[in-house]
Image (cartoon, rainbow, N blue to C red; front, side, top):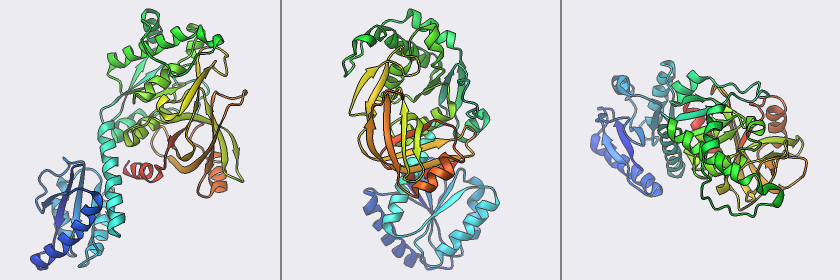
Length: 402
């Protein structure tokens, strides 16, 4: 991990004394990080070329020095202060100046344990932003007709994340399916008799999507999958489960905001997440049942197959996620809103009147308030993305960087 540390030091302070105090503080943080930071000192040449660039405000009286170098600094500014020699006061003045200029920034200040944890979090955020920048995301067909609140803001996605949306007509995919060969892919579950007739076609959909991905240099895609029911008499559920397991975010129903949320989650955690609908919510206990007919194979401990719930045809995936910590995440299509909360995954279910993968979550913090004030009052669409593990602070840090 390449983290650079630049310094601001007032000439009124004794350099040797400041160096001694600073070295002790930085060493305590580096021991917790497990590696040394690249100490660049007051030379800001090369700023912006590392995994994370940090400005170590070592003393007070450095506000003017910052103002001098500010025009050459891009991106979100991260300030570090030990709290010695009025450094926190100077950092607050600098951050206030940043905000007045319409720029974002943050002061990292606290115990060495907190500082090290925050540095690691912010480095992951910056790494994810670089990974997302320049990505092409395929939109195969328009969003499904029922997604009336899920339109993307293409300019916002381009300017704030560097993501390009590439429109691809569904007939182009269907043409590729018709000439696709069946890939040699080993499924880790037996296919029930009523579903077997759909297997070859479902695998051809996967193969065709891989061709589309290669043709347009896509890093992810969302598919107006219900169009495949009439044209191919099959579903994309199996193909999407396979692609997501390969680290290629692939979403349903042409839902671009959900797909962008998956892409961000994949860049941050390495997993695309489970795109699901909240099907039932108990606002008093914070328990909710979420379901969908596909889930990344690498998110589950086991899976089985059934037909697609709404249509009764094709192949859908019933996966069982591990119980324990989980995180629910969603970005709006214009990136103006975000939702994130930690949860406990209590159990997996397999009710016959819902989409095939079904999980029960319980919101961790203020469950009745979260359910009432967000899900039942101001949700960001219906699809939400569930990730295994506790990633709430990481997702929150990413949202703060937008």
